[in-house]
Image (cartoon, rainbow, N blue to C red; front, side, top):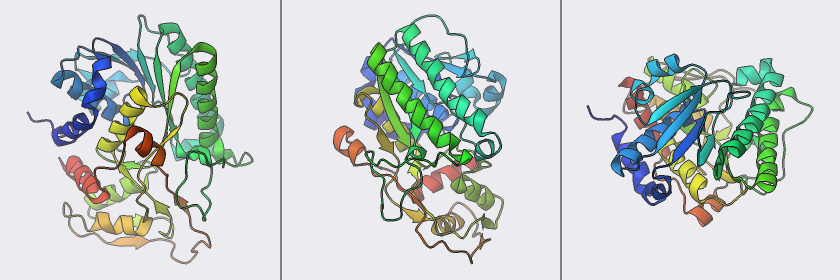
Length: 345
């Protein structure tokens, strides 16, 4: 049976083919391997492993293997992927050496961040510290942290794209900053472990994305809009629709993550995302007019209280482009269409 992601995975392999040789006969440990990022990491790893005969293995940390097996049985049952049951904050260290560790586990739920910011903060910080300790224990040479653009705090309206050297930060008096502050501490821990223990830590500051495996019922506007469109509408915009966002397709995302892991500079944060901004209203309209669904109405729930300042969350990705030759290959409309087709399938 043809893999429904074949074209995407061929796309990923095209731009990462020269990276994989150093993984040959090696082992990779991944936290967060059952989430949105994790599924793409596993899909692309398996594709490269089979096409290039790498004889590599991945061990995935998870709290619920049976749940993941129902979600993605072809990944859960693949002989090159094994699973280690545990909590990110205190999992028992698995035996053996792992040359690479990808720490993609994070609880990004807006609901949790609002209702239990202490748990959010502790999960990020304790989980990162524990995973870095495991990197010491197993002799890992390279460690990738999937951080977030939330480390910059609120993007000022006069700054169209946030560069990595922008020194903004979340508001420390706002408990809702637990996620962003947690990621800042996680990055600091990577810098400390790199200096003290020689672990080659790489930082990917991730923004917003679209693609197969993206949860449609979480706090991601683009996922909610696709869900509404698949149900026949209407697409509901909870605010006034004026904020600007940008979205990188998941196949491009995973190219960036693998490249940063293997080739990124030590403790040099890289913004990961698209520079092509779009308002939430225009995003909803694009999804509502997708050729893969019947025309869908867009409803704006709050069209009166338009903010005085531009609300935006857009990265500058020149560092990744200049140093690693990374860029957006798949545009937003194609990414949306691919995601809708995947969901319908």
